[in-house]
Image (cartoon, rainbow, N blue to C red; front, top):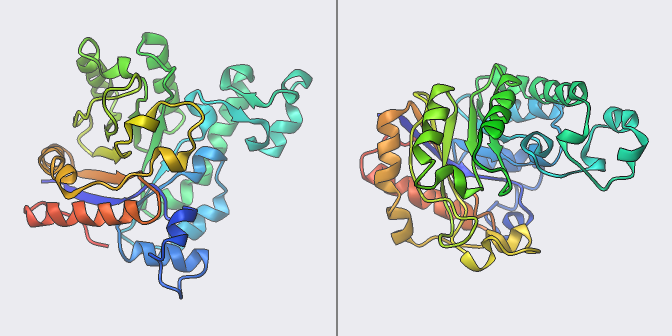
Length: 306
C-alpha cells in the first residue's frame, strides 16, 4: 500500500488566518508555515499560479519545514491557457513586450514569442529547484480551464508543459468535462498513463456544464492526486462569483466517507496519494483534511503523519 498524505490548498488564505485556527503566537509567515507543517505533511502552493515564484522564497519554504514535508505547486497561469494580467509577468518580460501587447489587460501564451514563454518556464523550474533539491517537491499541478477541450492539439500542450519540467512529477486537472465523459475518459487516462502524468481526481459539484465526474484513477506508479473543491452547485460555473464564495463549503462526515475506499484503491496502485482540500474558507479545509485523514487511519490505511 502506498502512503497517503493529506493537507490543504493553502496555508495563508486570509479567511483561515481570521478563523482562529492558528495559535496567537504563530503571528509571522515563518511561524504559520511551521505550525501548519506540524499538523499536516502536505500543502499545495497556489501563489505560484498567480505569479512566478522566487528562488529565495523556495529556499525559505524548504528551510522552514521538516525533512519529510511535501509541497505541491500550481503551474503559473500563463502556462495553462489562462488569461494572465500584464502586471503578473516578470518585469524583464514586460519590458520586452511589443507595444500592442503592453496595452492589453490580459495576455495569453499564444500572444508571446515561443522563446519568451520558454524563458518563463525555465524561470519557474529554476525557482522551485531548492524545494526539489531538499526532497520536498511532490508535483507541479497543471490546471486547465473550462475552454480547454479534449483533442490532439491540447494533448500536445500538456506534453509540451511536461517537457519544460523534466525534473518534476506533473499532475493534470481538467475543468472541461469533454476529457472525462463516457466517450473520452479511457482515452484520456491512457494518454496520461503513456506519458507518466498523474491524473487529478476531483470532488466537486455535479450536474453543471463544468462538472467533472468523481473518478479516482491512477495513471502513474508514483503518484495519485485527489482535490476537494466543495459541492456548491449554485456557484460552481456561475460568472462573477469570487473564489471565496465558490469554495465556501464544509464537507459532512458522510460525504468524506464516500472517498475512503477510493483513496485506499489509489494507495494500492501508487506509492503516494496526495489528498488536498481546496475548500479554503475559514478553517473548513483544515478541519476536513484532519477528518478524512483520521477516517483513513481508522480504516487501516498508511496515512503519513506531520
